[in-house]
Amino acid sequence: MHQSPVQEPPLALLFDVFGTCVDWRSGIVRDGEALGLRLGLRGVDWAAFADAWRARYQPQLDTVRSGTRAWTTLDVLHREALEDVLDQFRIDIDSADRDALTLAWHRLDPWPDTCEGLTRLKRRFVIAPNSNAHIALLVDIARWARLPWDVVLGAEIAHAYKPDPEVYLRSVEALRLDPSQVMMVAAHNGDLLAAARCGLRTAFVPRPTEHGPGQTTDLRPEHEVDLVVTNFVELAEALGA
Image (tube, rainbow, N blue to C red):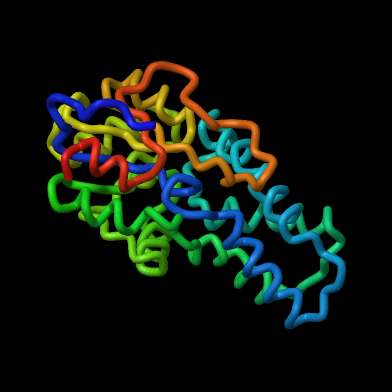
């Protein structure tokens, strides 16, 4: 699936994390099932629960993007959304368990190719997350999933959320590079389109089960990108790493 190797490789690669590097859905299901087993919660569809929780993600980010509220970290937004989802599924757990379940977003497993691909890419390029997660959350995910970042970048240094251009441009600026020297890697078309508009190069890596077996979105690039591969190992090969 991958295109011909790019003629002039970038100097740095920025990566979306949720969905592109790690499997958030399975992680939330795993922690939900563990909680349900411990508390004797019966009949909960934890996959549907994970989907409902994630469905509140973009609307919450919009409250910050629009200026309705000040910069707020994902831990706060995830906890607020959790309250609604628990009500939706008629689940009553105490505050400590709500806090613990919110931290499920800090314990997400990588896709099978993620670590091998990132390790290969790190030998030749600077690699960093460019995520809507805040720094502490990204550090926890990196330690859990063994993601070998050179530095942690993204929304918190810009106090903005993707696809706001500041998230991409501030990450590039932190590396003291020009946008054309940086490639954004993501499984989401909207993320790559926003990065391209900021002058970054782009690589599309589909994650066709991010939203479960019935996923219908982000299965292929919907606009021009610089590189299309099926996984991070192919990305390393295409970039000569």
